[in-house]
Amino acid sequence: MNLAGIRALVAKDFTLFFRNRFFALITPLALIVYIGLYFVMPRSVDETMDIGVYAPGWSAVVDDIQQQGLRIHVAESVDELKDGVTDHDYVAGIVLPADLAEKLASGEKPRIDLYVASDVTEEAKEAVASLMREMIYALSGQPLAVEFSTEVLPGPDTVGEQIPPRDRMRPLFAVFLIVFETFGMATLITEEIEHRTIQALLVTPVSVKDLFAAKGFTGITLAFGQGALFMAFVGGLNDQPAIIILALLLAALLVTGIGFFIASLAKDMMSVLAWGLLALVILVIPAMGIMFPGVITGWAMVIPSYYVVDTVDRVANYGSDWPDIWQNLLILVAFSVAFLLVGMVALRRRFQ
Amino acid sequence: MGQDAIAVEELVYSYGELVAVDHISFKVAEGEILGFLGPNGAGKTTTVKMLTGQLKPKGGRAQVLGMDVARDAGKIRGEIGVCFEQTNLYEQMSALENLLLFARLFGISDFDGMALLKRIGLAGREKDRVEGYSKGMKQRLMVARSLVNRPRILFLDEPTAGLDPASAEAICSIILEERARGATVFLTTHDMMEADQLSNRVAFMNGGKIVALDTPHNLKQQYGKRALKAKVQTPAGGLQDREVILDAPETPDLVHNLFAGERVVTIHSEEATLEDIFIKITGRGLKE
Image (cartoon, rainbow over all chains, first blue to last red; front, side, top):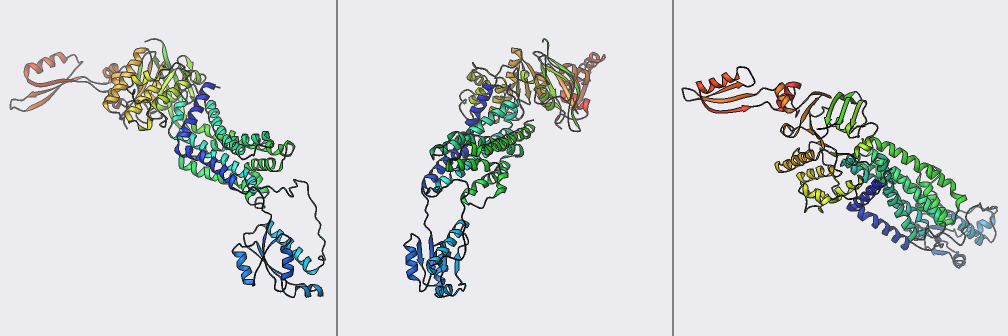
């Protein structure tokens, strides 16, 4: 390895990266924006839930539930209740018929209408259903003739210590910052190929291996640097910093390999954009699971970035330790090395 | 001229079915300028790529400065300078930054970039980004970059193509200075005049083969004809052309008769050009 040559190439790559107006602007800007977003997001969890109720003749019961800390909005009609739901004034609207008590007493099955907005999450629907059970208990004065069994499965118990939204978003932001460097890496290499500067480099004592080493170092430094800076600013390195740093480093290695691969496919800057966007969309899918819990299922585990998101999320937000996430890190190493090797082999052909 | 700087023996390269370089053999002595001529697709660039370690030969042998191009490409690259036909500079960097980068890649710690820029007439613009340079300035910088490591062999691919006369002249002067320093120059060009003026020998390449290799003078002797072209006045007052082939046994008599028997108005000698000779040998032009 020609270390002096590699150092010269890395210095040149950093110079060119920051002389590219787009990357010079977007790199610090993205970092600032994501750190800013983190700090403007709620730092605590709002556990209150707004519910609409149309319950003619049940005002006393409604008052009683309201005093238990729930935010109940009393509607004057079913239409007003529906409007409240569609306007997102409350999560759900419940209609309690006036003859509810009589029917419960006579053993009949009373009909209770529940209106829920189309975009309400499964978690909220479950919460509303639980609330209804509570209300019926309050109305009838006796528990339902069913038995509920609750079992707490092993895992982090966050009762009373719910993860604030901004902390839940940390892995998402970190992955965004790192994954974006796929563009940076692919652009640097594609420009070298497009402008034939790579030919000029390859008639000096610098070898193809030296070139890969320099590009790899540049890519990993840029990607890891941004991810680590972000996590440091938002307190993501407070617990188990070694694991988080290792996960971010592997993520940087992964995106560098993907950057190599994209550069080998791309014929010009437009192709870099097209392939880069495709990679970006795929790689952020696992991170979306944080924003929309329940949407991402087992299939996301085939996407390498899943193991970055999952590791960072579990370590930073739930205090997981090496024994909990070593498998994640191992899979991430395998993905990163595989992409790097495939990228280098594919790119080598384009250098000739 | 001393030992062989380049020695090529039965060198072959093919792209799939297409044989780009077909068993060529030649030698270039140290301190020699070899003009490498041929139309597009003749195999010139592929040959240069093999000699500079960019491509591995698929057959035959080539030695550069006594080192095998297939085994010692890394070592060879430290001793050569390559100037490409198409501009491939880092345009977002200045001229001085470009030269300093390559000096560092060659491991040269005491490199004087300003002296080199002064030599090629770019002093005063050294801090400007290359993207703002004219084609001539960029080409001069390309040549300068190939000289960063004071190469023992200089590979120049169409160094003056499309340049204004002043820039072309500046580059030709640098080539001659490099030869005077003792460097070997492998000059690939379409420009017959340039090849004729600069080269000690020229090689004609066509269809992957070397079809002729000699000094320009010998090639002209062998394949061309030298003649005297004259315009003479007729008795009626008009002008007529006369041609006397030189190098023939009867030439002295013919020249004598021309001046004795006719009123010569103008006369000049005419020599075959390298282009004429190339066409004669290959049946095609160099710019095809």
